[in-house]
Image (cartoon, rainbow, N blue to C red; front, side, top):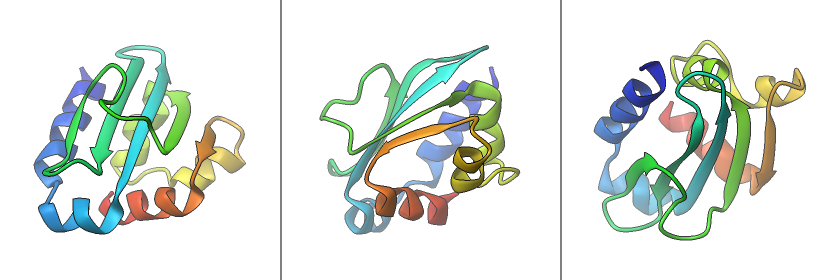
Length: 104
């Protein structure tokens, strides 16, 4: 589905340099189609993405609909706009969230 596709694209966009400069782990609690718990690990060497809880504790937990998540990563929605609109909730390090925007 679109969520899995999006995570595959993220995995493909990851670089060592990006992991080194970000040093953060993001957990996504997605509701709706293809939802569930997903993560992007930009802390462990090489980085990784996947379904389920991250291998280490998340620095940022974002809750949103899977539709909004896909929009966010196809650049139709900025994370901060999602939060401002009340459709999304971010718990944790806001600066790391800005780093994530750079990758998007």
